[in-house]
Image (cartoon, rainbow, N blue to C red; front, top):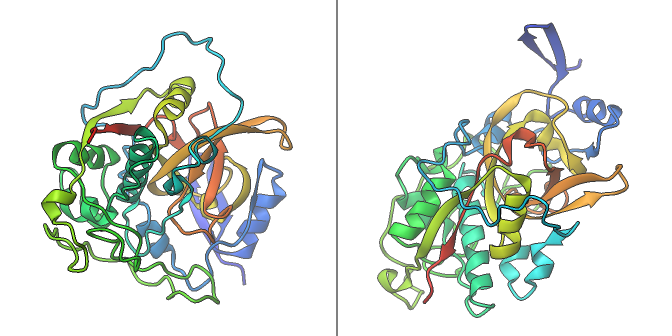
Amino acid sequence: MRLIYLLFSLTGVQCLFNPLSDEFVDHINSLGTSWKAGRNFGPHVSMSYIKKLMGVPRDLGKQHGLINKKHFSARNEILPENFDSREEWSHCPSISEVRDQGSCGSCWAIAAAEAMTDRTCIHSNGKENFRFSAENILSCCRTLSNGCNGGYPAAAWGYWVYYGIVSGGSFGSQQGCQPYPFEPCEHHINGSRPACLGEGGHTPPCQRTCEKAYSVSYKDDLHFGAKVYATPPEEKQIQKEIMTNGPVEASFLVYEDFITYKKGVYQHVAGSELGGHAVRILGWGVDKEAGNIPYWLVANSWNTDWGDNGYFKILRGKDECGIEGAVVSGLPKKS
């Protein structure tokens, strides 16, 4: 028997398949849209677990007083058709990394730590490969943020400027002062990682110390940002920001169809809203096979077995799911 959701709207009753079912995947693919759906999560994963991964409040555009930074005023500037930060700054290995937030709604902190890491390497010409600790942000940044229960990206970047952030690699890496505390979980039925179960992890307490094996003190390991700002919700401004300074953090609204994304240029076509999510935009391009559709190239934080090896493309220039309206970033302080 098929599982269905009944959604009541002004136009009547809309019938949708369970978002974790094969029927839902088949329905999306039958629409002939610009992307292909498939199974990313096994039937053992609950929707309550997936909703927990959406760690950004729904008012995505809330930038809390951040100043919009414009790089240029001329709207007729010619920008490249394709741009990929992984290729532009190939000497910065962090740009090609995909993290796993595990069982915590820490996307707001992870995407910030990733982009800070990328930008520190870029602005040091590859001399500083300092991986910022997502745990440090997650556990200690409590301004407008609630750890694994979500937070605002703008708060994470502000914390970098005012308080500094220590180093920390992925779970089990033993890299840096405070590595990530949550183990990656298994999205699929068969795999080597623990199953993605439960309601999510609990926020670790804020610690002002480093792991014993790390030779640098917490105070000496702190790295600071020089400034934090929002990028205006304009396609060319976002492009110019990425080209000039590196990947940015963006928030968008996740709908049920997004969790089934496999390849192509994502556009919302089915399912209801799940919550706000933070990601890292690396660049852009045009999908010629799909009819010259412009897209943003984005890294997610659900490991490499989700989507297109951990990445996805989303429609560019139309503020799809609000992704162009909530872009924040900053610049590292020179050491």
